[in-house]
Length: 428
Image (cartoon, rainbow, N blue to C red; front, side):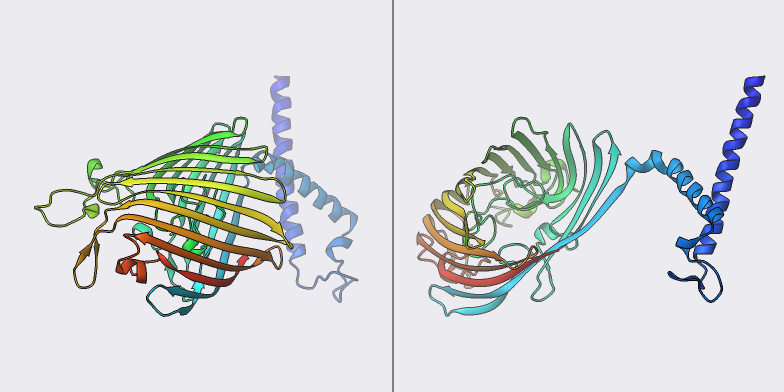
């Protein structure tokens, strides 16, 4: 009975202490919100400023702080962090394509995609975290939305949730593929221009896979510099159809990044099962676009003042492109900035049927392409960089003799011509 009485008294004392804390909090809050208070000498009302409270008030305030610390200490580990970030890049570009006049344009996202985004992470304790990334691309020259692959028009670059622990990281949503050179899960080193710098981008003429919707990804923990990644899309555009009618993406990669070395090997497949990927709507043709396969290998070593790089890509798609690309590039510390020379060579066969405006169809057959480029990045501050660039591309055989080679009319791909650019990038 004595123990019960003691427990009851102890509980009443705790309740009284918490009630007093709440009462003190209310009185101090009311006192602090008095409009007549000022930070300095005694004000006209004759009241003391907050840092000159009487001893009794100071003791109550101290009790309040200790009380609140005790109440909320147990929940401190679940603190969340939200970060707003972005990149703005734009500058004038001169472009000359073979067989056409030179053009001058204000170019957004010539190297780094202009974007803004929100990251959030919550610490669950015991090295478990839950987070999200929402990232939208846009064109700073006209304010339009960018990176709208597969119909996305809001969080176009990335929209994912993930959970992370000592066992790895698992994410769900829309994100860039393993060898895209973009996004949170990119693991392809070896090419200094990545997917940027116009005609020098690694996807030039030999496009890989960029982004997928309805994705799942797993990144393993790192063991002695090694880790692997697995990525799957249940439908790169939509997964509302029967599973066998959706186009799926599969990717697996192994990367080593330690002791100055950075290297990876990545295998990717897109099965092109959906009806939207039919080569033709003619029901008598009765065939779909075939699966596309890609292998990427990258290797680089950081000597301190410079980093030489080597990259390789192989793609294969029946009724499409079957080609190889090798690239040599480097990143060199020079004059307070980074000098980036790059050269690549592509060869293979393009069996794609290109349709011209007069409805004629052309199939290039054997093709090749040489790219030479030079960029320099000079930081004006920790957040702002100036980026001059010059690049040249010359294609041969089937890519030399058709309209596509001259005009680049199929999109951003340029097969014969040059680009000169000077831009500015700002990070926030």
